[in-house]
Image 1 (cartoon, rainbow over the protein chains, first blue to last red):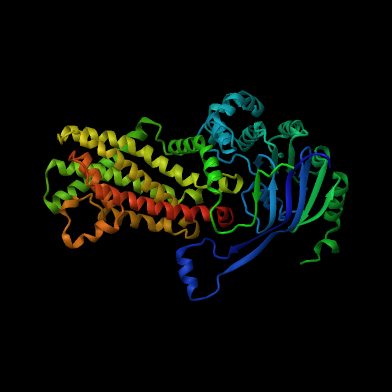
Image 2 (cartoon, rainbow over the protein chains, first blue to last red):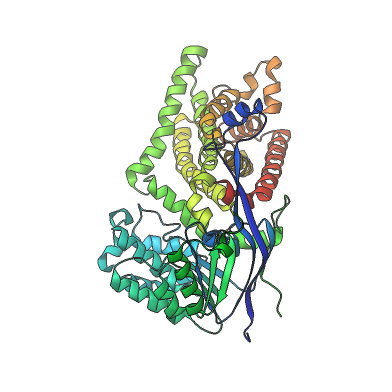
Length: 257
Length: 275
């Protein structure tokens, strides 16, 4: 790999305890005083992950539900601190982990573009400069001035994606956000991601759409139960993953549990 | 190879790098403003009737309490009413910061789970909202004061440092309680009793000077006491507050602020897991 390193993930593990009690309350704490042990369950979300992402790479992350894909993305974004290991990030990170974060449904689409953009770390001036582009990309037309609670879920997602798509960070992490809207918008957002591919940017895509990943990525990592199973050429890794999905469990993957 | 911009390592108790934290907080000041504005709009404070309600609500409250004073204490003088409104309005600045701050972290769950930003932003914007709500009531107070005819003097400028201390205290309690609520979610339901108790323990329904000597302990252990006393002296009576009261209020605010902020900053990286 000739390009510079963007993200370095070294021996990262993530464990967290979830309590059996639904919410941590003072009442529950007082009640459990007599019982001694706290009612908790330890979840091992990530287990000794080593992964380097270089600039110019488009890394696809695949795996079944609960494989730890989102946890890993949150670690790289700095939302969750890892329990073991070390993550080094060489650049600005923008995340698209869930659509419409920071949006306020009672405000108009226009106001939410600003709110969402600010939440994503853009400045007011940047958003103002890009506003027309965002509005046009979302294809909302006059609806942009209507309160967002009047939007259909597709419109909501379209606006959210449009805001995120104009952020031009060094490292962009997209978690299953590409499959929004109708077929036409999906195509459009996919094209935008392809446009964003460049030598001075690293993209990390989490997706279940294998065909999309084959087309866009030049590298794929496969996670299963918090472990990195395979990493390499998209076609090779995806084929292996799909074979695994069809065959069910293979001994090499399931040895630990 | 260049040095990494960000390094994420296992979470240890302790403070993040304060310089960097402050920088990233400062760069998000527009977001704090817009976020608070949108919250206010959700509560309809951008409309005329919304603002009217904002003024009407404390006004009605002060009327109710005034009736209470008249019935129990037999006080009918108008300065008393001015004292009541002034103190009540300032009290609600702190109380609103508490009630807004307590759920700021837990309500911002989606934001916290999906974006990296200094979490302290959320209680800060709760305080910004409370301050926005406070200013219209200030105008109402000046109208009441003009009508009642208590003196306007230069000494009233003392109200400015008192207000700043009150806002500082609001920030301190909002940060503290928002963090506590992550670990003990039932604090939020316990809070109305806390604010109600504070209301009665503070010199709002009575004047600080009217306090019986054997209840002086209230003065020492209630952070709001010296602040509200100074506020009333400056705003209602137009006289300079005691310097000792100002310092006492400032000391309380600083103490709670540092304790709460330390607690918050050393814990905030864990919030995403706790929610």
